[in-house]
Image 1 (cartoon, one colour):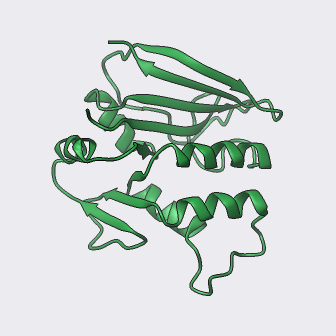
Image 2: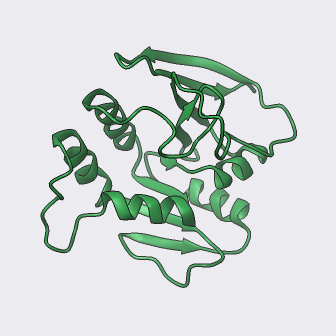
Length: 187
């Protein structure tokens, strides 16, 4: 049985997915995202998201986490840092940070990735998930919707032309007013 591909992202009420568009992270949201990471053993990103995550969450060469990180962010980093990462990019020459690079037909590469043994693949970003959703490869969608209207920025699943019917399987309210909604495709 293929391992599940789970797409999870923060978004605003108007569907903006820019990493600075929602509410600032707090201990509750960081604990949620840490638990989301633990549901998978592989992270799948495009170049932009990989570079963003690496810049924020990779353990520094000194081995010490930066002073700006609180305990919840350190815990998140300690879970993410050693995880296996797969990066889809046609422009990067190489990757590190426990990562492998996939090139060429990303849809075929992700199909093969799903066939490998594992507990699941956590998918992040904006462009790559839209491509994979359009091809029916995403098994679960998790959106943390922030009570903010951003008015600008990249949009959630922008470019999908055909409807994808989803079933709500879980929801949770955060003290901040954000709402987690988890969906699975309807067969």
